[in-house]
Length: 153
Image 1: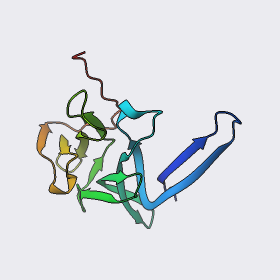
Image 2: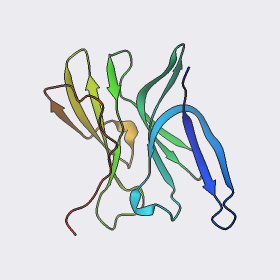
Image 3: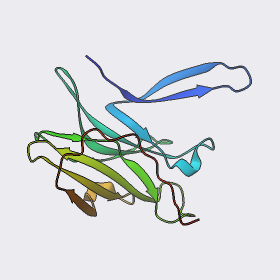
Image 4: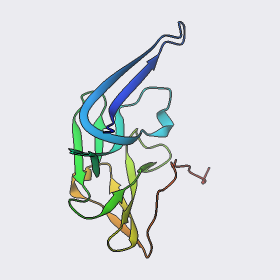
């Protein structure tokens, strides 16, 4: 039975030594951070989380984790519906917004209804649910791993 959890790999660039640690017992996949902070340390992680099931995991929620305190905000996107909650992407509110201040765009494929949807959450408080829903009249399938890039520069 496959399971994945939020973790961290640390590499000592001087010695080449690497260490891995599990940070949470909540099943999760597809972690993201505010990409403007790659390599500089970051305070917030965004991932798809779920629950342990008899035959593996069920990824059904968006989770925002404060990586310093490990406090979480969770919004359950689906319960028993046949759907895939896919990899979210973080987009900063403005190019110079503080770390983690922005939006998380989460694609969802609602299999039973044969449609897709993009859910957009405000990182101020994802527990209020999506601030916008963009309905797609077909299934999304498995989305590629995505990154946000601001083309206004």
